[in-house]
Length: 172
Image (cartoon, helix red, strand yellow):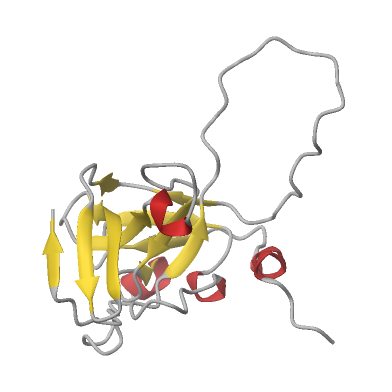
């Protein structure tokens, strides 16, 4: 039996359960229908960040039109995830390492300012678009605890479990 594709994995892992995640300071940051462990991770990056698709921004209201020969709508997915109480840095940070550099737009906890994720720039995907890619957020492992773990007083282990990466320089 062939292995499911990443989109099929998201659909299989998603359920009617809403999983909530908190920052290490206990601030609620994330609600998703797919547990973080079931999300795909970045294989080409030393941080092994979880890649969470984000819903598209709401479309402005338009006048109803008759159906035409438009392209079909994308297939529905059962996954839904939202960032809550995070602060997006509008100026990108350049992260350099031995393998190259990335332009990242950091997502921080709105309470304690901990970096919990980031968005990448469209130029890193050889796209003809510019600016921040808003359809996916990369969530750093070790920056979140589930609500049940928080209630029980558990925190992530030391830096080894947090996926710490040797970064040479960050410029903002």
